[in-house]
Length: 193
Picture 1 (cartoon, rainbow, N blue to C red):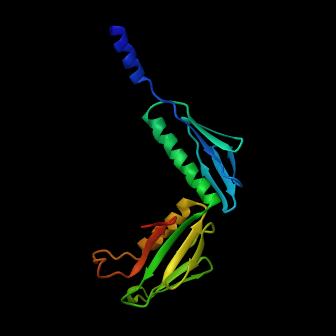
Picture 2: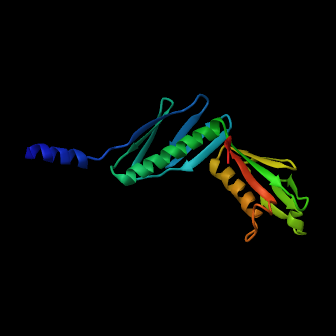
Picture 3: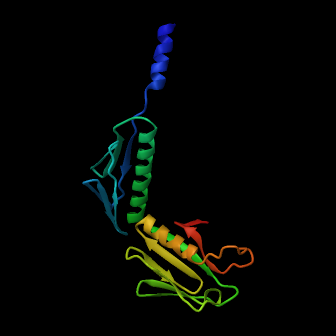
């Protein structure tokens, strides 16, 4: 009886080694050198530093293999984070990441233009000074009077640009139900916000 209890305790203490295989879609190639993972596909290329003491990344036969060297909570968190980054990178180079922003101007006629890689917002709430945001070279922007569409293979870059545009026109201490002027994210990767 005592032996049975100790084996049960030993089984509970035994920690899991995490191992995942991620298939690369057709037309997507991957390379891992010096802690940098680089993926190339039909929508572009993305690279990310993925250097870890607790995880191994191997690429062979159209698969990326992710395996933890150690056990425990820290390894679990790191492996799942890397797996999420890899899936986002694969989606970015095969399909691309799309953000849609709505331009709303109810009190003053606000104009939004794109010229030479800079989005310019004029006459926001009657301001004389124009507000400008530089578009990174990785992002394709399409600006119309009522919406902005951003596309990129890098999810972080396009998400940061969309967030910057939304935050640029925030008005603190104003009720958003009444003062609705601004630019708002309405769609992320095909999902309504």
